[in-house]
Image (cartoon, rainbow, N blue to C red; front, side, top):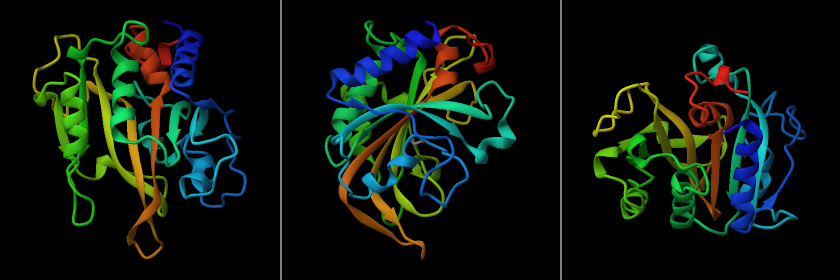
Length: 245
Ligand code: GLY
């Protein structure tokens, strides 16, 4: 699959699920002094994730230009770039875990879409902390879709997502693809870097305040982000995201 076909498929899929496609915001954020560059598809949407109504509705999707400065030390490996594109879809107080996990599964595995073999996929979910409960619900949804329990790992801070220090945040579930030459091991080990994270679904239902406390948001949102270049590498059978078209 080439880059254009992949982009078109992503946008077509989320259009078919009732999303409005919005343009990529500028790489240099407008009205957001907290970052120099857009780091994620959700960054320009912070006001709407925080409760302000979006003029185009509650289901949005796009392809956002990003620079993620926290990744700078990893640039040049097979999966990290200075500049990258993020495929994202959002629920602004609309659908939640069941819908988005089912759609992620469908988009990744269905013949009509990416057609990735389930035997090369694995998943992480949030293990919980003092405030946010363990996310058994997401794990059960993956299992109900046919995912083997051995391919689901519960993790801590890697599965709690926030852009920067304060703002909308929440537990996530992440999707990994086996890039090793051999058959993927039955038991998923997230520390084995042949498992590459390609997509995350963040359940943005909290807000982190300046004093470090976490408060529930007035709406439950979904924020997903799929790394365009690294997923394209998988889809085009390349070892490195630098080898894609
Ligand atoms: N969806 C959050 C992120 O990875 O940017």
